[in-house]
Length: 496
Image (cartoon, rainbow, N blue to C red; front, side, top):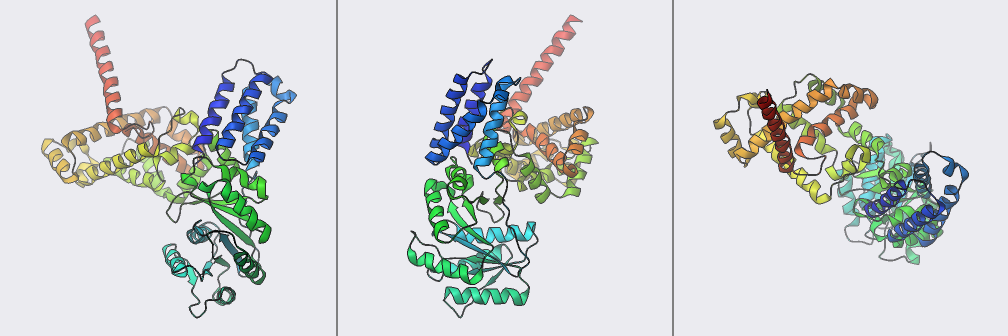
């Protein structure tokens, strides 16, 4: 997400860094480029104009020009303004002691309300220890209530069906009563949408809101519709009074105009963003972290949270111990790949790492798909080995390699390539351990988990994952390096 805007802003600010001394003229040029980048990202015109003016006022302050590195202070100002533009701080759902706390989900038809209802329910159960109950009051769209039931089953959350009624108000009254009787502390109401905004829809939402007195009214919008999403949110806010926004399909939105505009236009924050089709692919919206991602600073906090939520701590610690004691086997390598896959695609992970760690290199979704294919191929080759072979690769002779290649649908050359990469990885980990890198990472990162992730990223590097290249490319490069070293050794011998 935000790829287009991110690329343009990073280039503009990089050009500032290239100036030996900043002048007001340099800043004027940069601000014009920033304004164009925002408009091209489908940011509201007035929002873009106000943003640039705010940056200009702060950049013209005396302290900027007196600083040792003025360009860094301009970057800091742009970062602060971006975070403030999107809301400043994260806005979590705030629950009260009343039972149940009602959350209304509203929006136009096709925006992803039903799926978002399920995703948010699962997130609340996993992260805020809530016990949600779902109810659909969409009595107009065919099979809408059945769809919510399917979603509820998928996320393991209860649903109130109310089969005897087709009246929205009767359904919500029954759902509130059911929640009280069976101890549900949160009621999520999936309301009916329309293909366009109409008065009947708004009247129905007003009646449901008056009946249930929700603590939150969340407007769900498709991020890829840009300013149309902002305009629809504004109309819903004027009639119903929304308290926050959920932007779906953020993973497919390279511009980000809706996320950047909505807080300034309607005065209500984005609270969640959908970042994929899976039911756990939803994230709280952190303006400061998003600003970091846009400017290439990474999002290490979110990455650590992903690791803590999806990777077993004891297993990560054990793998880290094996790395530091040179006991890392092919069996461990395969287990590590399995853990790594839980974190999502390589392109997603690369975007969360600061440019200093990646050298400014990013990989496309197509390259990420190639890496995913390579990982599956590697797993298939290792799966075709016996336990003895996985724990001691030195027993692999020609006949064993032929059997493994046949069993995994690969070639002997690919089996040999994997073994070479594994050997290179072990040497690299030994060097990292001698340099104290493993220990330092484990101490600095939460609970050693991110240290384990560091091992995974390091361990994956021989496969070309961090560089975005293929395993073949890395192998060619490493062989080139090896050949170069051999030539140096031969020359040294001749001199002797």
